[in-house]
Length: 418
Image (cartoon, rainbow, N blue to C red; front, side, top):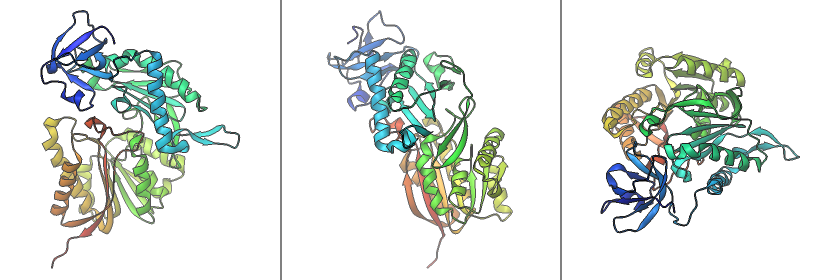
Protein backbone atom coordinates (compact mmCIF):
# COMPACT_ATOMS: atom_id res chain seq x y z
CA UNK A 1 0.00 0.00 0.00
CA UNK A 2 1.16 3.51 -0.81
CA UNK A 3 -0.24 5.57 2.05
CA UNK A 4 -1.95 7.85 -0.49
CA UNK A 5 -5.69 7.32 -0.73
CA UNK A 6 -8.47 7.98 -3.23
CA UNK A 7 -12.10 7.30 -2.27
CA UNK A 8 -14.78 6.66 -4.87
CA UNK A 9 -18.36 7.87 -4.89
CA UNK A 10 -21.17 5.60 -3.80
CA UNK A 11 -21.94 3.04 -6.50
CA UNK A 12 -18.83 3.88 -8.55
CA UNK A 13 -15.89 1.63 -9.37
CA UNK A 14 -18.00 -0.57 -11.65
CA UNK A 15 -15.12 -1.14 -14.05
CA UNK A 16 -12.83 -2.26 -11.23
CA UNK A 17 -15.53 -4.54 -9.83
CA UNK A 18 -15.84 -6.14 -13.26
CA UNK A 19 -12.06 -6.85 -13.15
CA UNK A 20 -11.25 -3.86 -15.36
CA UNK A 21 -8.38 -1.43 -14.96
CA UNK A 22 -9.61 2.17 -15.03
CA UNK A 23 -11.15 4.76 -12.72
CA UNK A 24 -12.64 7.80 -14.46
CA UNK A 25 -12.56 11.40 -13.22
CA UNK A 26 -16.30 11.48 -12.42
CA UNK A 27 -16.05 8.45 -10.09
CA UNK A 28 -13.86 10.07 -7.44
CA UNK A 29 -15.35 11.51 -4.26
CA UNK A 30 -12.16 12.58 -2.47
CA UNK A 31 -8.39 12.18 -2.43
CA UNK A 32 -5.48 13.01 -0.16
CA UNK A 33 -4.02 16.49 -0.60
CA UNK A 34 -0.43 15.25 -1.04
CA UNK A 35 -1.14 13.29 -4.26
CA UNK A 36 0.81 14.40 -7.32
CA UNK A 37 0.28 13.39 -10.94
CA UNK A 38 2.05 10.10 -11.62
CA UNK A 39 1.85 8.95 -7.98
CA UNK A 40 0.74 5.46 -7.04
CA UNK A 41 -2.44 5.65 -4.95
CA UNK A 42 -4.65 3.20 -3.06
CA UNK A 43 -8.26 3.07 -4.24
CA UNK A 44 -11.14 2.65 -1.79
CA UNK A 45 -14.87 2.34 -2.24
CA UNK A 46 -17.18 4.78 -0.46
CA UNK A 47 -17.48 2.20 2.34
CA UNK A 48 -13.71 1.96 2.80
CA UNK A 49 -13.19 -1.33 0.94
CA UNK A 50 -9.72 -1.58 -0.64
CA UNK A 51 -10.06 -1.98 -4.43
CA UNK A 52 -6.47 -1.80 -5.63
CA UNK A 53 -3.43 0.38 -6.31
CA UNK A 54 -2.80 2.34 -9.47
CA UNK A 55 -1.19 5.49 -10.78
CA UNK A 56 -3.01 8.82 -10.70
CA UNK A 57 -3.16 11.65 -13.24
CA UNK A 58 -5.40 14.69 -12.76
CA UNK A 59 -4.90 15.72 -16.41
CA UNK A 60 -6.52 12.57 -17.80
CA UNK A 61 -10.18 11.58 -17.84
CA UNK A 62 -8.84 8.15 -16.88
CA UNK A 63 -7.79 9.35 -13.42
CA UNK A 64 -6.33 6.05 -12.20
CA UNK A 65 -4.92 3.06 -14.08
CA UNK A 66 -4.80 -0.05 -11.93
CA UNK A 67 -1.50 -1.84 -11.29
CA UNK A 68 -2.52 -4.40 -8.66
CA UNK A 69 -5.41 -5.59 -6.49
CA UNK A 70 -3.05 -6.98 -3.87
CA UNK A 71 -2.91 -4.58 -0.92
CA UNK A 72 0.40 -6.12 0.20
CA UNK A 73 2.14 -5.64 -3.16
CA UNK A 74 5.17 -3.37 -3.39
CA UNK A 75 5.38 -1.85 -6.86
CA UNK A 76 9.13 -1.78 -7.28
CA UNK A 77 11.62 -3.08 -9.84
CA UNK A 78 11.11 -6.70 -8.74
CA UNK A 79 7.35 -6.27 -9.24
CA UNK A 80 7.90 -4.89 -12.74
CA UNK A 81 10.33 -7.66 -13.66
CA UNK A 82 7.82 -10.32 -12.66
CA UNK A 83 5.11 -8.65 -14.76
CA UNK A 84 7.45 -8.52 -17.75
CA UNK A 85 8.58 -12.13 -17.23
CA UNK A 86 4.95 -13.27 -17.02
CA UNK A 87 4.20 -11.45 -20.29
CA UNK A 88 7.17 -13.06 -22.05
CA UNK A 89 6.41 -16.55 -20.70
CA UNK A 90 2.85 -16.19 -22.00
CA UNK A 91 4.18 -15.46 -25.53
CA UNK A 92 6.47 -18.47 -25.45
CA UNK A 93 3.61 -20.68 -24.29
CA UNK A 94 0.99 -19.60 -26.86
CA UNK A 95 3.24 -18.95 -29.87
CA UNK A 96 5.95 -21.53 -29.43
CA UNK A 97 9.68 -20.92 -29.44
CA UNK A 98 10.08 -20.35 -33.17
CA UNK A 99 7.45 -17.58 -33.32
CA UNK A 100 8.50 -15.89 -30.08
CA UNK A 101 12.26 -16.43 -29.74
CA UNK A 102 13.26 -17.56 -33.23
CA UNK A 103 15.17 -20.34 -34.96
CA UNK A 104 18.26 -21.87 -33.34
CA UNK A 105 21.13 -23.88 -34.77
CA UNK A 106 22.26 -27.25 -33.40
CA UNK A 107 24.29 -25.53 -30.70
CA UNK A 108 21.27 -23.54 -29.49
CA UNK A 109 22.40 -20.19 -30.88
CA UNK A 110 19.64 -18.02 -32.36
CA UNK A 111 20.20 -17.76 -36.12
CA UNK A 112 16.93 -16.02 -37.01
CA UNK A 113 15.13 -13.85 -34.46
CA UNK A 114 11.33 -13.88 -34.29
CA UNK A 115 9.20 -10.75 -34.02
CA UNK A 116 6.19 -10.36 -31.74
CA UNK A 117 4.46 -8.04 -29.31
CA UNK A 118 5.98 -8.63 -25.89
CA UNK A 119 3.92 -6.25 -23.73
CA UNK A 120 0.34 -5.21 -24.53
CA UNK A 121 -0.68 -2.68 -21.91
CA UNK A 122 -3.60 -3.61 -19.69
CA UNK A 123 -3.79 -7.09 -21.25
CA UNK A 124 -0.40 -7.76 -19.61
CA UNK A 125 -1.27 -5.82 -16.43
CA UNK A 126 1.12 -3.00 -17.35
CA UNK A 127 -1.39 -0.32 -18.28
CA UNK A 128 -0.48 2.25 -20.90
CA UNK A 129 2.67 0.67 -22.36
CA UNK A 130 3.21 -1.43 -25.47
CA UNK A 131 6.52 -3.05 -26.43
CA UNK A 132 7.16 -4.82 -29.73
CA UNK A 133 10.20 -6.95 -30.50
CA UNK A 134 11.38 -6.73 -34.11
CA UNK A 135 14.14 -9.31 -34.39
CA UNK A 136 16.64 -8.06 -31.75
CA UNK A 137 15.24 -4.51 -31.48
CA UNK A 138 12.58 -3.24 -29.06
CA UNK A 139 10.08 -0.50 -29.91
CA UNK A 140 8.26 1.13 -26.99
CA UNK A 141 5.02 3.11 -26.99
CA UNK A 142 4.14 4.70 -23.65
CA UNK A 143 0.78 6.48 -23.41
CA UNK A 144 0.18 7.15 -19.71
CA UNK A 145 2.06 9.30 -17.19
CA UNK A 146 2.45 6.76 -14.40
CA UNK A 147 3.82 4.00 -16.61
CA UNK A 148 6.00 6.58 -18.42
CA UNK A 149 7.85 7.16 -15.16
CA UNK A 150 8.49 3.39 -14.96
CA UNK A 151 9.32 3.00 -18.66
CA UNK A 152 13.10 2.68 -18.48
CA UNK A 153 12.93 0.20 -15.59
CA UNK A 154 10.42 -1.88 -17.57
CA UNK A 155 12.70 -1.85 -20.63
CA UNK A 156 15.73 -2.85 -18.55
CA UNK A 157 13.76 -5.67 -16.92
CA UNK A 158 12.61 -6.91 -20.31
CA UNK A 159 16.15 -6.93 -21.69
CA UNK A 160 17.23 -9.04 -18.70
CA UNK A 161 14.35 -11.48 -19.16
CA UNK A 162 14.99 -11.87 -22.90
CA UNK A 163 18.72 -12.39 -22.30
CA UNK A 164 17.84 -15.49 -20.29
CA UNK A 165 16.59 -17.01 -23.57
CA UNK A 166 19.67 -15.93 -25.51
CA UNK A 167 18.11 -12.77 -26.98
CA UNK A 168 20.52 -9.87 -26.68
CA UNK A 169 18.70 -6.65 -27.57
CA UNK A 170 20.88 -4.39 -29.69
CA UNK A 171 18.72 -1.28 -29.43
CA UNK A 172 15.51 0.32 -28.15
CA UNK A 173 13.48 2.98 -29.93
CA UNK A 174 10.60 4.94 -28.43
CA UNK A 175 7.53 5.64 -30.57
CA UNK A 176 5.46 7.52 -28.01
CA UNK A 177 4.28 9.98 -30.65
CA UNK A 178 0.52 9.32 -30.56
CA UNK A 179 -1.68 12.37 -30.07
CA UNK A 180 -3.41 10.71 -27.10
CA UNK A 181 -0.26 11.46 -25.03
CA UNK A 182 -1.36 15.09 -24.93
CA UNK A 183 -4.47 14.05 -22.97
CA UNK A 184 -2.12 12.76 -20.28
CA UNK A 185 -0.19 16.03 -20.22
CA UNK A 186 2.76 14.32 -21.91
CA UNK A 187 4.84 15.49 -24.89
CA UNK A 188 4.94 13.35 -28.02
CA UNK A 189 8.28 11.54 -28.21
CA UNK A 190 10.29 9.77 -30.93
CA UNK A 191 13.83 8.94 -29.86
CA UNK A 192 16.31 6.27 -28.92
CA UNK A 193 16.36 4.83 -25.42
CA UNK A 194 20.08 4.18 -25.08
CA UNK A 195 22.51 3.83 -27.97
CA UNK A 196 21.53 4.76 -31.52
CA UNK A 197 21.20 2.09 -34.24
CA UNK A 198 19.91 1.70 -37.81
CA UNK A 199 16.14 2.10 -37.50
CA UNK A 200 15.51 0.12 -40.69
CA UNK A 201 15.25 -3.36 -39.17
CA UNK A 202 15.09 -6.57 -41.21
CA UNK A 203 12.69 -9.19 -39.90
CA UNK A 204 11.26 -12.52 -41.10
CA UNK A 205 7.63 -13.50 -40.48
CA UNK A 206 6.02 -16.67 -41.86
CA UNK A 207 9.13 -17.08 -44.02
CA UNK A 208 8.61 -13.65 -45.65
CA UNK A 209 11.28 -10.95 -45.32
CA UNK A 210 10.43 -7.35 -44.41
CA UNK A 211 12.31 -4.15 -43.79
CA UNK A 212 10.59 -2.40 -40.88
CA UNK A 213 11.12 1.32 -40.36
CA UNK A 214 10.67 1.57 -36.60
CA UNK A 215 11.20 5.34 -36.59
CA UNK A 216 8.82 6.40 -39.37
CA UNK A 217 6.52 3.44 -40.03
CA UNK A 218 2.88 3.25 -38.89
CA UNK A 219 2.38 2.67 -35.14
CA UNK A 220 5.58 0.93 -33.99
CA UNK A 221 6.64 0.14 -37.57
CA UNK A 222 4.68 -2.97 -38.58
CA UNK A 223 1.34 -4.64 -37.83
CA UNK A 224 2.34 -7.79 -35.97
CA UNK A 225 -1.27 -8.50 -34.99
CA UNK A 226 -2.13 -9.95 -38.45
CA UNK A 227 0.67 -12.55 -38.37
CA UNK A 228 -1.49 -15.68 -38.53
CA UNK A 229 -4.23 -14.00 -40.56
CA UNK A 230 -1.70 -13.32 -43.31
CA UNK A 231 -0.81 -17.00 -43.22
CA UNK A 232 -4.50 -17.95 -43.53
CA UNK A 233 -4.82 -15.98 -46.78
CA UNK A 234 -2.16 -18.04 -48.55
CA UNK A 235 -4.33 -21.12 -49.04
CA UNK A 236 -6.82 -19.31 -51.31
CA UNK A 237 -4.14 -17.54 -53.37
CA UNK A 238 -2.62 -20.42 -55.38
CA UNK A 239 -2.61 -19.44 -59.07
CA UNK A 240 -4.87 -16.50 -58.17
CA UNK A 241 -5.07 -12.88 -59.24
CA UNK A 242 -5.11 -10.79 -56.07
CA UNK A 243 -5.94 -7.18 -55.18
CA UNK A 244 -4.56 -6.10 -51.79
CA UNK A 245 -6.10 -2.79 -50.65
CA UNK A 246 -4.37 -0.67 -47.99
CA UNK A 247 -1.30 -2.81 -48.45
CA UNK A 248 0.83 -0.57 -46.17
CA UNK A 249 4.25 -2.25 -46.42
CA UNK A 250 2.87 -5.09 -48.56
CA UNK A 251 2.40 -7.76 -45.89
CA UNK A 252 -0.80 -9.41 -47.17
CA UNK A 253 0.34 -8.96 -50.78
CA UNK A 254 3.67 -10.69 -50.08
CA UNK A 255 1.92 -13.57 -48.34
CA UNK A 256 -0.39 -13.93 -51.35
CA UNK A 257 2.67 -14.31 -53.59
CA UNK A 258 4.22 -16.73 -51.07
CA UNK A 259 0.97 -18.71 -51.32
CA UNK A 260 1.39 -19.09 -55.08
CA UNK A 261 -0.57 -16.14 -56.51
CA UNK A 262 0.01 -15.58 -60.21
CA UNK A 263 -0.29 -11.77 -59.98
CA UNK A 264 -0.82 -9.40 -57.05
CA UNK A 265 -1.76 -5.72 -57.23
CA UNK A 266 -0.86 -3.83 -54.05
CA UNK A 267 -2.80 -0.59 -53.48
CA UNK A 268 -2.22 2.11 -50.88
CA UNK A 269 -2.84 5.84 -50.46
CA UNK A 270 0.65 6.38 -49.03
CA UNK A 271 3.57 6.81 -51.40
CA UNK A 272 5.92 5.97 -48.52
CA UNK A 273 3.98 2.77 -47.85
CA UNK A 274 4.13 1.74 -51.51
CA UNK A 275 7.87 2.50 -51.61
CA UNK A 276 8.41 0.18 -48.64
CA UNK A 277 6.13 -2.48 -50.19
CA UNK A 278 8.26 -2.37 -53.36
CA UNK A 279 11.41 -2.69 -51.25
CA UNK A 280 9.94 -5.72 -49.46
CA UNK A 281 8.94 -7.29 -52.79
CA UNK A 282 12.55 -6.93 -53.94
CA UNK A 283 13.83 -8.45 -50.67
CA UNK A 284 11.79 -11.59 -51.40
CA UNK A 285 12.33 -11.76 -55.16
CA UNK A 286 8.60 -11.26 -55.79
CA UNK A 287 8.68 -8.24 -58.13
CA UNK A 288 7.85 -10.30 -61.24
CA UNK A 289 4.43 -11.14 -59.80
CA UNK A 290 3.56 -7.80 -58.22
CA UNK A 291 2.44 -4.38 -59.39
CA UNK A 292 1.55 -1.31 -57.33
CA UNK A 293 -1.11 1.40 -57.31
CA UNK A 294 -1.00 4.61 -55.27
CA UNK A 295 -4.30 6.32 -54.48
CA UNK A 296 -7.48 6.45 -52.41
CA UNK A 297 -9.24 3.09 -52.52
CA UNK A 298 -12.67 4.79 -52.39
CA UNK A 299 -11.76 6.33 -55.75
CA UNK A 300 -9.71 3.50 -57.24
CA UNK A 301 -12.07 0.58 -56.53
CA UNK A 302 -14.93 2.03 -58.65
CA UNK A 303 -12.39 2.88 -61.38
CA UNK A 304 -11.08 -0.69 -61.44
CA UNK A 305 -14.65 -1.99 -61.64
CA UNK A 306 -15.50 0.31 -64.55
CA UNK A 307 -12.38 -0.89 -66.37
CA UNK A 308 -13.65 -4.46 -66.07
CA UNK A 309 -11.00 -5.60 -63.59
CA UNK A 310 -11.95 -8.71 -61.61
CA UNK A 311 -9.85 -10.71 -59.15
CA UNK A 312 -9.81 -14.17 -57.64
CA UNK A 313 -9.03 -12.67 -54.22
CA UNK A 314 -9.67 -9.16 -52.88
CA UNK A 315 -8.12 -8.15 -49.54
CA UNK A 316 -9.46 -5.18 -47.53
CA UNK A 317 -7.34 -4.19 -44.52
CA UNK A 318 -8.04 -0.47 -44.04
CA UNK A 319 -6.93 1.67 -41.10
CA UNK A 320 -9.56 2.18 -38.40
CA UNK A 321 -12.48 4.20 -39.78
CA UNK A 322 -13.46 5.21 -36.24
CA UNK A 323 -11.42 6.01 -33.15
CA UNK A 324 -14.36 7.23 -31.06
CA UNK A 325 -17.97 6.31 -30.38
CA UNK A 326 -19.07 9.63 -31.88
CA UNK A 327 -17.97 8.63 -35.39
CA UNK A 328 -19.32 5.06 -35.49
CA UNK A 329 -22.21 5.92 -37.84
CA UNK A 330 -19.83 7.47 -40.37
CA UNK A 331 -17.50 4.48 -40.03
CA UNK A 332 -20.33 2.03 -40.73
CA UNK A 333 -21.04 3.90 -43.97
CA UNK A 334 -17.36 3.65 -44.94
CA UNK A 335 -17.03 -0.05 -44.11
CA UNK A 336 -20.24 -0.85 -45.99
CA UNK A 337 -19.13 1.01 -49.10
CA UNK A 338 -15.61 -0.42 -49.27
CA UNK A 339 -16.87 -3.97 -48.70
CA UNK A 340 -19.54 -3.62 -51.38
CA UNK A 341 -16.91 -2.25 -53.80
CA UNK A 342 -14.59 -5.10 -52.91
CA UNK A 343 -17.31 -7.71 -53.49
CA UNK A 344 -18.02 -6.23 -56.93
CA UNK A 345 -14.38 -6.87 -57.88
CA UNK A 346 -14.35 -10.54 -56.84
CA UNK A 347 -14.90 -13.10 -59.59
CA UNK A 348 -17.87 -15.45 -58.91
CA UNK A 349 -16.58 -18.12 -56.54
CA UNK A 350 -13.56 -16.02 -55.59
CA UNK A 351 -12.63 -14.85 -52.12
CA UNK A 352 -12.92 -11.69 -50.04
CA UNK A 353 -10.71 -10.95 -47.04
CA UNK A 354 -12.04 -8.09 -44.91
CA UNK A 355 -10.80 -6.63 -41.63
CA UNK A 356 -11.59 -3.97 -39.06
CA UNK A 357 -9.02 -2.84 -36.49
CA UNK A 358 -11.29 -0.50 -34.51
CA UNK A 359 -12.51 -1.75 -31.14
CA UNK A 360 -15.45 0.68 -31.44
CA UNK A 361 -16.61 -1.34 -34.47
CA UNK A 362 -17.64 -4.32 -32.37
CA UNK A 363 -17.87 -7.82 -33.92
CA UNK A 364 -21.67 -7.79 -34.18
CA UNK A 365 -21.77 -4.37 -35.86
CA UNK A 366 -18.97 -5.30 -38.26
CA UNK A 367 -20.71 -8.55 -39.24
CA UNK A 368 -24.01 -6.72 -39.73
CA UNK A 369 -22.31 -4.11 -41.92
CA UNK A 370 -20.67 -6.77 -44.10
CA UNK A 371 -24.03 -8.54 -44.43
CA UNK A 372 -25.72 -5.35 -45.64
CA UNK A 373 -22.89 -4.76 -48.12
CA UNK A 374 -23.38 -8.28 -49.50
CA UNK A 375 -27.11 -7.64 -49.89
CA UNK A 376 -26.46 -4.44 -51.85
CA UNK A 377 -23.77 -6.14 -53.94
CA UNK A 378 -26.23 -8.97 -54.70
CA UNK A 379 -23.83 -11.69 -53.59
CA UNK A 380 -23.92 -14.56 -51.12
CA UNK A 381 -21.05 -14.86 -48.65
CA UNK A 382 -19.84 -18.28 -47.58
CA UNK A 383 -17.68 -17.87 -44.47
CA UNK A 384 -14.36 -19.71 -44.57
CA UNK A 385 -12.73 -18.27 -41.46
CA UNK A 386 -13.20 -15.73 -38.71
CA UNK A 387 -10.11 -14.75 -36.73
CA UNK A 388 -8.96 -12.02 -34.36
CA UNK A 389 -5.52 -10.64 -33.54
CA UNK A 390 -2.61 -13.01 -33.00
CA UNK A 391 -2.20 -14.23 -29.39
CA UNK A 392 0.75 -11.97 -28.66
CA UNK A 393 -1.94 -9.27 -28.62
CA UNK A 394 -4.07 -11.03 -25.97
CA UNK A 395 -7.76 -10.28 -25.46
CA UNK A 396 -8.73 -9.78 -21.82
CA UNK A 397 -12.49 -10.00 -21.42
CA UNK A 398 -12.50 -7.40 -18.65
CA UNK A 399 -10.79 -4.91 -21.02
CA UNK A 400 -12.94 -4.35 -24.11
CA UNK A 401 -10.23 -2.17 -25.68
CA UNK A 402 -7.96 -5.21 -25.96
CA UNK A 403 -10.36 -6.85 -28.47
CA UNK A 404 -10.13 -4.79 -31.61
CA UNK A 405 -9.18 -6.82 -34.70
CA UNK A 406 -11.80 -8.70 -36.72
CA UNK A 407 -10.74 -10.75 -39.75
CA UNK A 408 -13.08 -12.55 -42.14
CA UNK A 409 -12.33 -14.76 -45.11
CA UNK A 410 -15.36 -15.34 -47.34
CA UNK A 411 -16.10 -17.07 -50.62
CA UNK A 412 -18.18 -14.70 -52.74
CA UNK A 413 -20.98 -16.40 -54.67
CA UNK A 414 -23.57 -14.86 -57.00
CA UNK A 415 -27.03 -14.44 -55.50
CA UNK A 416 -29.46 -16.99 -56.90
CA UNK A 417 -33.13 -16.76 -57.82
CA UNK A 418 -35.71 -19.51 -57.36
